[in-house]
Length: 318
Image 1 (spheres, helix red, strand yellow):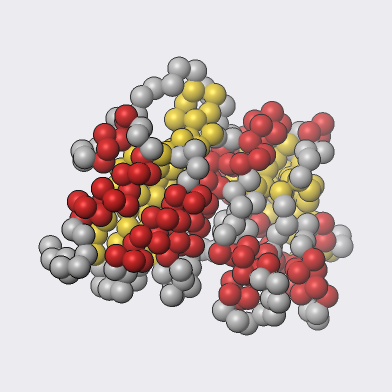
Image 2: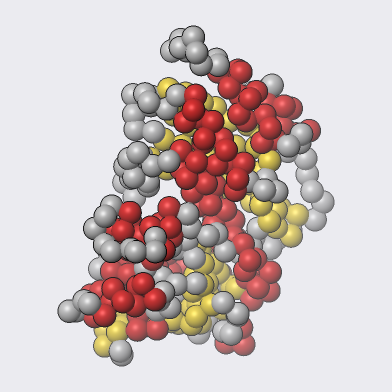
């Protein structure tokens, strides 16, 4: 056990002051005075559970502001729920604090959770000390109508592959946040630091999507996960990628357009939604058709009609 500095609240006082307010009085959280929560059933709904963790130096830059770390942690988990067509409900939190994350930094972290946690309740968790790096893990819960969770494995041969928003900003944003890429208005770094979970698409996805995933590892990889889980193949047209003005400017400066498009489609951290829909649903507002689900179990990537090597397709987890 690490004894707290005399100027710092102890573990239980920190829980009371920082995290109990985030329960918003939810009876199932027991004011965080217990070692567990009791989740009531919701007739006619299934409980969807997802989990993502973030590690300093891997998922966010060393020295990042604690409130931004907390906000991104919430958002990447909400992105998973968005792709499932789920309504967010609450979460469990675990944080490993390294040296240097004292009371002011922990207050800022909790403030970040409060800022982006509207409509959510904290149900429990744990905090521990570590020699580093800072690590935070969140388990997110949400509700979907019974039997209605959108899985990766429901795509059908002939389905269109659609993606929301713009692709490549997350990868470019990491480079911008590192100072490796001009970003005069801070747009790209903002897309990396604070992605927007596409909860606005929940009803459209429930109505039309046969399969869906969030774009965290890279568009090629995550669309490929859908195809593999569905026992099918995938054809992607990278020249149809929806790009932001910033990504379009970057692309114009690259000598190898095909390789650059593949990089944007493999970089990850976009937290958009890729989905498979039937022909009559290919015009979902806010989404762009970029490919098709095919019969043969292979990933084919094209630029202007010419096949290119898809490469690894995205981030490979250890």
